Length: 160
Image (cartoon, rainbow, N blue to C red):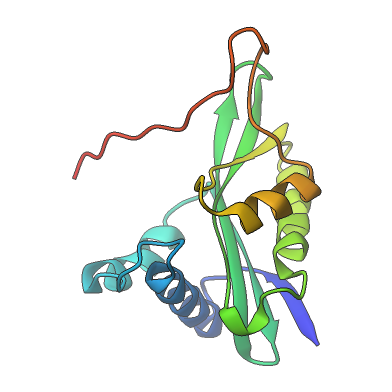
């Protein structure tokens, strides 16, 4: 039986699971496609512990991590309420197709509602059609204020 739990980084099992899941995600074709750098492995959990805006959930099959979804609180100026950006969703290849992503997203949504968030946001790669289908089924859609102005695009400018 697979259990979905809120991440508690004070628990070594959760800290280790977050690192294991992020390492697996980094190797995945829909992640970075390469190993997680050692410096990230060393700094990720301590830096997440410092953040009051972090929310995460883990899926465990027994003591084995099967999935991770985490997000960070932001703020919607058009709603005057916080939002939760779902930053990473990863399910191990052995556990895919079992409905873990929607279960983890459901738990994140519950936590976001408890924080008074007005919406969830996320980004997904254009080529990740299975994830897009799962997110649509969960209720996500392309962001737009007005159809006349089109959909929002997610851009980045790296600073490091």
